[in-house]
Length: 239
Image (cartoon, rainbow, N blue to C red):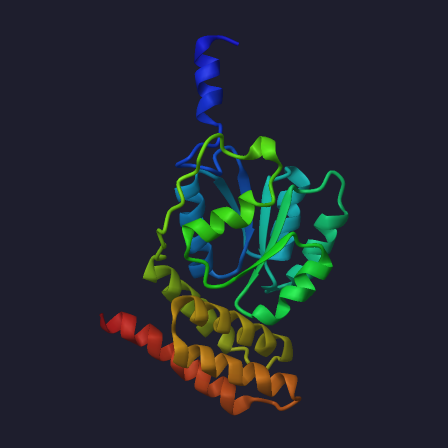
């Protein structure tokens, strides 16, 4: 290896400012807003990011390459992230670190039982917490040498990503009479709203989820949620 190769290799090693340098992180997340937050966290940490927005896409990624870390949402449009976690935990060789994320902290135990190495509750905005969640589960030879700078930085995703999620939700709401669509919408919109700090929208989604879990149709709750989504889109248009 010549000097240039040694220099290039050194540039890929984790360091105090970029402790996740050299890692590839697969993010399995259907929300553009949440995914943008994770992209910024990876960027600040030095990690490469690949993205999948559903189980099918994630499985396709995993057939082609093995990332260092997988961070998967629990609620996905084509199924549960718990199934993906179980598959990754059983695979050999196994992904080094598998983390579950969700806006519903009540699912943490289920994710750990499925085989996740850890759980992060949304919203995910703290750079230090994000880095610690990964570094604490990596072997010593993948840790940065020397003292690490612990940053108190928080990230703020682009508001346009939130509007993308609202537009996606509005499109799905045209099919809200379908049972599976209602269940998915309740968790999707609730997660996005909590991540963005939109309390009224989060409550509307929670009310719909509660109605569904209690066996009630929830038509009124769905209509209220649809109205709030539309209002967010109209406010953006007005701006």
